[in-house]
Length: 286
Image (cartoon, rainbow, N blue to C red; front, top):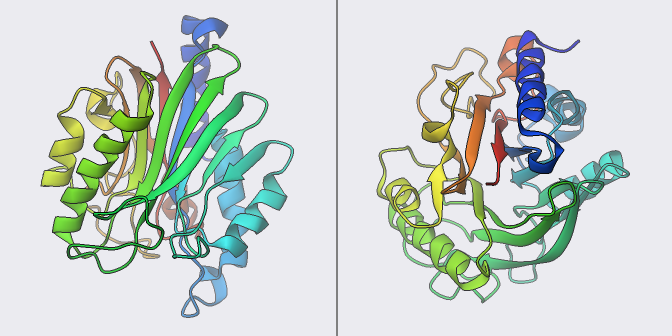
């Protein structure tokens, strides 16, 4: 059964559609850390036990585009099979051989045409697969893309990524790399960033991403008050105290953010889909 929150968000989306019209149909952008397969995860934390709830979140909230983190090849293949006919997925692994855990992007094929995509690494040599620098604990990757929205006929540029969980210097440098790569590749298109950035709103990395000519923070830009928890991460603990944001969605400077929600149905329904809740913004490219 759908939660009350899902109906509220669906109603907001419907009202937004009616006010904007088909020409400017909003996009439902989601960020979703799906928790990579771990041998330590058993029973209800196992990916295949959680997968039905991942699919339920996607279906209930009708995400148009999903920036995912902690998705390895096996997970990507399994989810692609379940979502085929509605969504396609692209992205590669962070290792030197381009396999393993990555930051894939899922998108609705009836609405969007993928024009181009690629990867870069969050390092001093971003075009070198598997590269790692500064105080990063592991190799980190970003997936970039260019889309055509078939409904609005507008094109946009989009990067999805996952910053290091231990290295503050690497997170600051990674924020600079995102902006540098966007400036290099976006060809004048509106820019979106999504990611589990493993840092709070007061950090230097988020300050860099919030104060530039390309993007703004969707949370602080929402026309309506954000709903749900502040922290998407709850660590498989339904009673974990809410802290602050670590997963972010940045949108074009002149975009209209109609709503922002942390979809905390995992906690409300006591169902593990991941150790993170998805974040959803409803946004119009102006």
